[in-house]
Length: 249
Ligand code: 6GU
Image 1: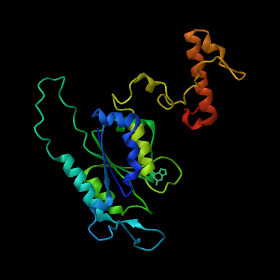
Image 2: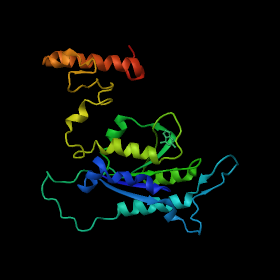
Image 3: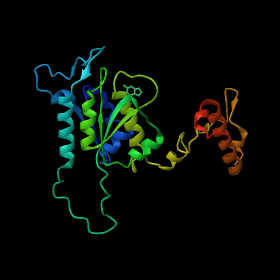
Image 4: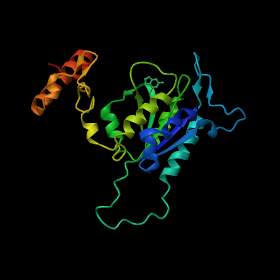
C-alpha cells in the first residue's frame, strides 16, 4: 500500500519510522510519503490560509496549494511504472487496482470504525489531507472528488485542532491489518471490535498477585469452559460500557 499525507506539520509523522509500521516500511509492505502543503505555495510567506468569505471566526485553507498538492500526488501515482517485469502465471498476477482514495479527517465526517479500517486495508493508495484552522475551502473536496474517491472521516464526537493526530490513528488502525505487518495474524482475531464486542480480560502469571487471584476457570485447562467464560465476559463488558454495540434485544 502507498500512503501520501499532506500537512502543514510534517513533524507530526516522524513516529511512523518506528515500531510495527516502521518495520512494514523497511520491508516494503507500506510506502509512506509526507508532503508539506507549504511546498505548493508560491508567495514569499508560503500562505496556506485566508479569511472566510461571508465573515466569521478563524481562517480557511486556500484551495490553490491543495489543488497543486493533490495533482502532484495523483499524477505521480497514475504515471506508468517503469519496466516492471511482466507476470507470467495466474498466481502472480497483480491484484486489480482499486484507484486512489482521498481521506480528509474532519469532525464533520463519517465515523471511523474497525470495519472501515479493514475495508481501507485493501486499498492500493490512500491520500490523507490534513486540514487546520476552521477547515479547507469546500471546492477542494469537489475537485478531489473529480479525481479520486473522497471520504470525510471523523474519529469521534470531539474536536481536535487539526487532522494530523486523527490521521496517525487511522494509519495505525489500517496499517496493522495489511497482511505481513503483524507477525501473528491470529492475534488480530480476538481483539475488541473484530467480532462486534469488546474483548475479554486477560491474565498471566503469577496466579496470585497482591491478594488478587486469576479467575480459577482459566487455570483448570478446560478449554470449553474457558471459551464460554470469555464469551460471557465479552457480553457483560459490552453491555456495561458499550450497549450501543449490541443488537437491539
Ligand atoms: Cl478526523 N479531525 C478533527 N479536527 N477533529 C476530530 C476528528 C478529526 N475526529 C474527531 N475530532
